[in-house]
Length: 380
Ligand SMILES: *[C@@H]1O[C@H](CO)[C@@H](O)[C@H](O)[C@H]1NC(C)=O
Ligand SMILES: *[C@@H]1O[C@H](CO)[C@@H](O)[C@H](O)[C@H]1NC(C)=O
Ligand SMILES: *[C@@H]1O[C@H](CO)[C@@H](O)[C@H](O)[C@H]1NC(C)=O
Ligand SMILES: *[C@@H]1O[C@H](CO)[C@@H](O)[C@H](O)[C@H]1NC(C)=O
Ligand SMILES: *[C@@H]1O[C@H](CO)[C@@H](O)[C@H](O)[C@H]1NC(C)=O
Image 1 (cartoon, rainbow, N blue to C red):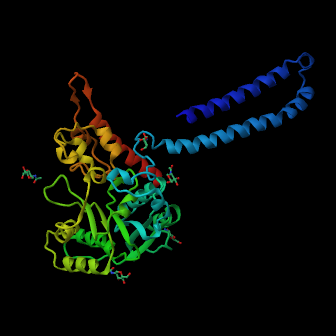
Image 2: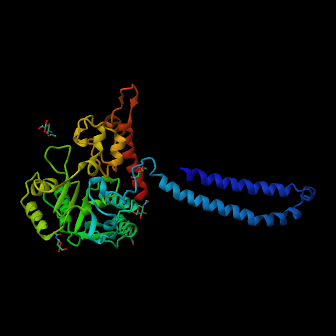
Image 3: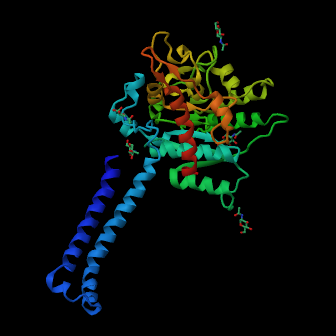
C-alpha cells in the first residue's frame, strides 16, 4: 500500500514544483511588464523541456501505478503468499534447501485435464496461479485431440496462452465417450494422469478449485504409487480432488482394468478408492483439501481433526493450499449464481462470547467467490 500511495504523491509534488517554478519565472519583474505574445512565446518554448520532463515522469509513474494496481486486484484476499521457499517442514518432510534447489524439476508436473471450455478457463487459472506463486514443477494439460491449436477458436487461443504464458505442456488425448453418462468421459480423462510416464511424479488437481499456495513439497513424498487426502466430509473415503501419482505402466493397466469393470455408480473417486483406499499414503486433508462449504458449516471437528481447537476461518484459509468449490445448491463460481440463493446460503454471522457480531465466516466465504470471479475476468 505504501508504494501505491507514495508514487502518485511524489509525482504530484514534482508537478507542483515545476508549476511553481514556472510561475516564479512569469512573475519576474522584467517579464511582468511585457506580457506580449512575442515575448512569452520563446519563454514558453524554453519551458518545454521541463514540461516534457514532468510529463515523462508522470507517464512513468502512471505506468508503474497501472502495473501495481493489477497486483492490487489480488489484495483483498491475502492468501496468495509465495511460500514455495519453505513449505516442506510444514508437513514434517525434512527436505534440505539444497535438495529443493537442485532437484530435477522436469521429472515433476501438476496435471490438469479439460474436456470443455469452462474447465479450460479454470485450468488456465490454476496454471496462472502456480506460475505466479513461483512453483518450480512443470505443468501439463491434457486436452481433447480434436481441438486444433492452429484454429482461431477461443479454445485454441486459451491453449496457446497456457503454453506461452505459463509454460504449460499440452498433451492431446482421446476423450472417450460412454453411453449415457457424460461424467464417465471426464472421469476417464482424469485417470489418464496415471499414463503420463514421462514424469516420475505428478499432482493431479481438480480445476473447480483454487490453488492458494504451491504444493511442490509433495513431489518429495516417500515413493508410493498414490497419495491422497481423506474426503473429511465423508466417512472412510479418500478424495480424488488432489492425487499425487507415480505414473507407471503397471498402475495405468490396473486403472484401465478397474475402469472396464466399473459399476454404473463408479467414477474416478470410486475407482481410486477401490484400488488404493486401503494402502495409499494419506495426505493431511487440512491444508491440502479444504471445501469452500466448510465455511458454511457449524461443526468443524472433521476438518480440524479436533473437538477442542477453536475454528478460525481466516487462519484456516491462510494455512490451506488447495480449496475446492463445493456449495450445492449454489453454483460453481464461473456460473452466474442467483443472488437470492447466495444470500440464503451464505454463512451465518454469530454472536461471540463477548457479545459482538462475528461475520468472519461470511466475509471469508464471500471473498473467496468474489476473488475467483475477479481473477477469471483478469486471467481469461
Ligand atoms: C507469508 O508467509 C510468511 C512466512 O510464512 C508470513 O510471515 C507472512 O505473514 C505471510 N504473509 C501473508 C500476507 O500471509
Ligand atoms: C516466488 O518465489 C520464487 C522463488 O522461489 C520466485 O521465482 C517468484 O518470482 C516469486 N513470485 C512472486 C510473485 O513473488
Ligand atoms: C476464424 O477465421 C475465419 C476465416 O479465417 C472466420 O470466417 C471466422 O469467423 C473466424 N472465427 C472466429 C471465432 O474468429
Ligand atoms: C498411454 O500412453 C501411451 C504412451 O504415451 C500412449 O501410446 C497410449 O495411447 C496412452 N493410453 C491412453 C488410453 O491414452
Ligand atoms: C459417519 O459415521 C458416523 C459414526 O459412525 C455417523 O454418525 C455419521 O453420520 C457418518 N457420516 C456420514 C457423512 O456418513
